[in-house]
Image (cartoon, rainbow, N blue to C red; front, top):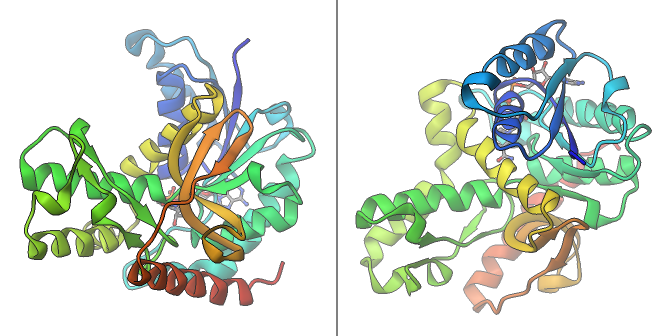
Length: 307
Ligand SMILES: NC(=O)c1ccc[n+]([C@@H]2O[C@H](COP(=O)([O-])OP(=O)(O)OC[C@H]3O[C@@H](n4cnc5c(N)ncnc54)[C@H](O)[C@@H]3O)[C@@H](O)[C@H]2O)c1
């Protein structure tokens, strides 16, 4: 039986997520947005590409949640994106209201769904979704680390002129200026990148990864969507196909990495149960300190939540 995914927010990220899910035939998709005609029009346009792209998965667009019932997974991309000069944190007030509204409306029809949060500021919006839904942490997690790692992988592949497929990168922490890219756990064909690139080059790649979101915002005057959508779809695929794939996700820590009651990006095993297991890796003191700093930045955002 074809699985069902609801994507809320038919903007740049949401529509691209929806498009990639049906093109890969991972699930049927219901695309929801408050803008009249937009999810319907985008869904129809994408379905009209199906004969050429050759996929049989179906997508419909809607301004209501009726058609979303029985979804296996819900991707929440509703919200306003970052504008130039705006930090992710500035988004809190507006997007908290939007994410609350979405969770309240989508959950009654899909009580067994897994929620993947994309709206920024990511770690805080995950917490809003968790508080409003009251779901266990396995079923409410966020996309950030896959995107941050993909960016770092591209920078490594480009610097070393190797296939992106050979690269593996590790980025922990919150989805913000305090994220923690870990070069010593990042590899090319199994070789730690610390063996392959001089420190200055690696430092520059770490910095560019950390500023990766802002680099795109400066060009486009809005936030990225192609790579973010790819990252979401990798997580959707891992869950729907029960792959047990270890990916960095924003997950609610309960003692892991010495931290509690905070969403933070760490390696997580994704399968049909959602965030099935948190993988703990040994960290050096400086790495632990960087992760702690990142967690504190997330906790500061939690303090201003009204939920
Ligand atoms: N986690 C990440 O790594 C990551 C990456 C990129 C973007 N984002 C975030 O994802 C969100 C979406 O980005 P985008 O570029 O697609 O923005 P966008 O403006 O293109 O799309 C957002 C859509 O949400 C809709 N929306 C607003 N309120 C809604 C509601 N109550 N119910 C349903 N839909 C509603 C809007 O009408 C709009 O179509 C932003 O918050 C952005 O910061 C996160």
